[in-house]
Image (cartoon, rainbow, N blue to C red):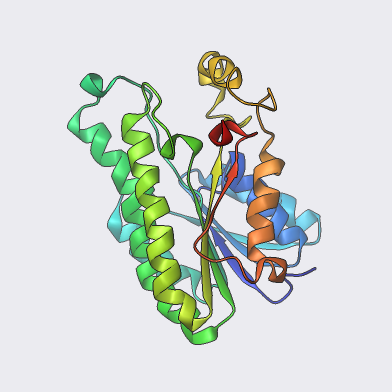
Length: 242
């Protein structure tokens, strides 16, 4: 129960890696604030965590809207662990990405975590011993057809991770990122044909399960990772190593 008495905020917590992370943090004693757009799914996960003896509540928010980001920061209150897991991606050639789709990538994947950190990190610095974990992607590290806008937005998050580690590290706030490879999530199901192609280049030769990513995120939140700051941990079966 390394995270007892800690309060965590997880964005994108209604499915996939986000929901697995919320469960994992709660299982280790954290009080978890879950956020997403789907209230029924969020409340269902809260009930599941509570049945398991954990503490959680749900705050509905659309992170494409800056006013919702600001409201979320206020509603969350005291936060010791911030996990920026919410994400948006559209798989298409660059020539087929319109302005609205491009803007949505950066609104959700970059602007929302930027302003959440801006609102919460000073409070976290005042408390000390806090952690921010950003979820990126393996395609922020290499070119992948059809993933230009998504990869670019997550590459920006990895740079922000380094900048925030330098900015807030001296105050006792660690900032790191996790870059998953293809993972079994509801959002990934329509893309399994592409995943089959990606798997051919992955040394472990398979898609990850959500807990294999959320366990790494949770590790970074615990004191066991106390000297890790400004790093991006690749949870991609070795894809970025080859």
